[in-house]
Length: 217
Image (cartoon, rainbow, N blue to C red):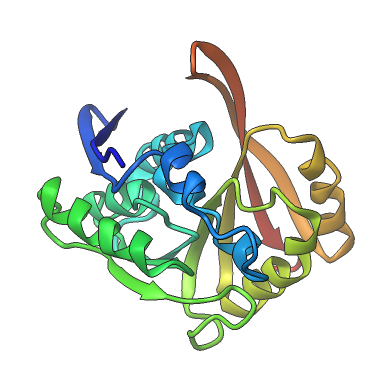
């Protein structure tokens, strides 16, 4: 398996993200007869356009996250967590996969982030945090299956502090297009904060950043 480094230009600097191998190599060794395999496909080893778009958005927010306690849901290799930490946020990166967290931790050192995020293994069905713990919660391309909606909506509702915001980066997947109306029907205000085209294997990928806030706050 080949490892290597993935690179992204964010906030005026080049970020280098170490990884164990590419997705195709890891997938070739994946156990097809494992009943839990579907939830452990190693998507985290790639730097998807939604992750880069989210990191750039967080960087542009800059002062808005400085000093705030923030949660990166499904942090993967850690790019948006590292960028937010560099902006002065108190970041917790959460992922179900321990290997992802190990590489995120290495990437904090590799990129010389002065105050590194905390890295926590957690399942968004049972997040290991107290209620109302975070002023900002974000995730990149985490609604790629409709079955994830109930758990994530519940996580946001439980963990978001009063007046807090959720930022979701979405690559315009057909499966997630109805999601924003589902959030509205659950009592969330939903606005599109940004859209941009990012390159992906030589083709443009449209990425939107959606902001959620509970109505009445």
